[in-house]
Length: 584
Image 1 (cartoon, rainbow, N blue to C red):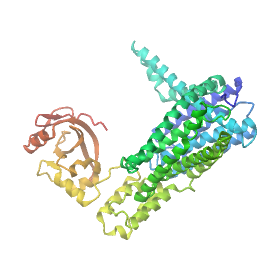
Image 2 (image 1 turned 90 degrees about the vertical axis):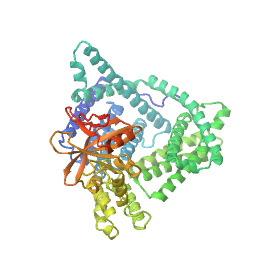
Image 3 (image 1 turned 60 degrees about the horizontal axis):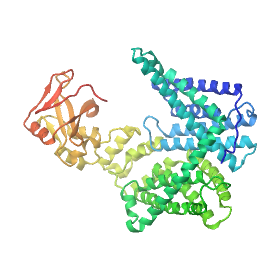
Image 4 (image 1 turned 135 degrees about the vertical axis):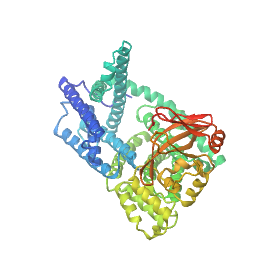
């Protein structure tokens, strides 16, 4: 199938304007990155960061993919303005709801949704401008969607190769001790404009090279037609084995629903790519009849994924991820159900109906994404309300409630935690209040140290943790409350963690070195610093290999000392732990 579009070569004026916009984009992206790096405006404003980030990345790319002087009419500029306002609304909401530095819950999903929404809007815009009507033909929509996808993919590949050539250039001159070019090519002020210009230039070329893009599409369709048969066979075999294995095994692995959704998503993509043209059959009659029933099998898999997500929600309540998963399953269910009905009840003309379904679903997905990335969706509020209901109904105890998750749900979550601090449910529960206050201190940072939650946990750690010297004066309980519970995971099970009080900095003050298992026969030595009374944090660590029994025997014998070096090392028996400079 040839593409349904035929973009003529761009005029020199159009090419110059696109490249000029790309140069301005590259300079602006460098300024944007540099401003955030040195904490200038807009780094302190979440909405400003996200709005400018979306504008600088999406709008110039949309312009490079769509502009030509002959179509630069009033409707074209109004369409770009509408896209700009849509990105403004998404960016303001995202910036208010999510902390980029802490990568709060749901932020990545919103960005993915924004990119998908942009892609749908862009190919619909180009098709509408091409046909001069708001509801363009499916052939035009399909043609521009593939055209944009392949242009972006090929242009990205060209920019990557261009960067590789620059690096090769620099390395070649390094052979004769000339580092100027490598230093130049890795400077942000050079890299941003040059790569963006290379990407834009490639877009100009591929936009008008219909033969090149068309050939690529035909090659991909041939490959996809083979992959669709393979993935259809896999789906049939999987469903056939379910009565033997049972469906319980799907969720015992912990990633069953995610794997099924990924499989169904790939299968739907291949199915669309292969059967997108009603005038051209990818297989013979027999294989076509078999392949068209693949959505019926996929519908069974979607039902399993939906059941798995429903179980997770019933067990653990709503979370932003589970809401997004439910939305994704709903979209896949709509596609597979529509395709299955067409396959089962329309023996003739099913592919024409298939095209109409895709066009309607594109609009539905776009509207759904607009809703989910807007403040009106309140996904965070839905998740918070569900978790609070589990807490107040007794489904989860106050000391085991995940306060850190609520803190990651933006300003709304932090406000809820502040209100919970005065809740009667937590008033006489010191462990719960400790976890809640720690979550508030984290301000939504998922990497903020989370302390052991319960008194029982801390008691087990205190019992198993080896402190050297044994008579050291130390408020161990307060130390445990300041550090991540993951650091002491093994300490709850066995005497595998060691806390050394040694002067390793040469200031005649004992430093605190925590030795914890990392992986098999490997341990981590972390230096702890008290930044406030009773508050510690890890300022650096090194990994070392050791035999646990030999290590513990040497400590019990008191065979522990420092060894001179720029930073004093620790010697335990025959084992030397080289501290060196902190690695983080």
